[in-house]
Image 1 (cartoon, rainbow, N blue to C red):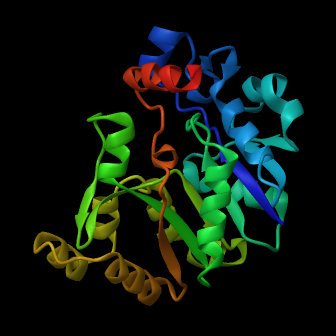
Image 2: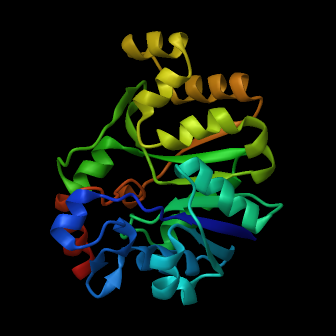
Image 3: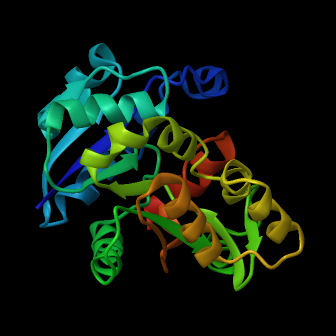
Length: 250
């Protein structure tokens, strides 16, 4: 059994505040539900998920979604600090799923599929990625960042399955990875000039990145190619709200 942390920190998005009347995107209402509720429902569909903790503004969240989860704990200053606060509450000895609150199209079967793919290879942490053509087939040409690697063009998803015992040991590096989790290009920069050189020459592979991470961290991380573009689709602009409404109406 695994626990889950939903990151719902108050991002004070002025654009969302002006257009939708909410500064915290997780509390944006889409078809009579808060956006975070869709994520909670997806997690509850996964039989291997035991506890769900939300990390974010307690005053805003607890009265609205507190009854659906084990606890709401205060957010940190960034996604990594918030992850640490969630891990500190859970004190789990098993790997923990860290997931964003702004991916309302996620379903339990997509998380189950990710877990199944993770189970086929041993690693300390797992990170879903999505092919560009798979994403665009579903959602069209919306503005998203994709990294061109040997074997295809990919972008990172909004989940991380990680061993909590290793987080504290390598927290500075992992903090940078989590902060830039949506951009494979930025992650490549973090990993050093050799990776950048290969990227420029269009010879950088997923395996190259995984091996570099292993050398830097002394821990094994694996990129898991997900067939579900929904793990990539997050609502971070008003145009994404319209897309989410369209798909959730079906």
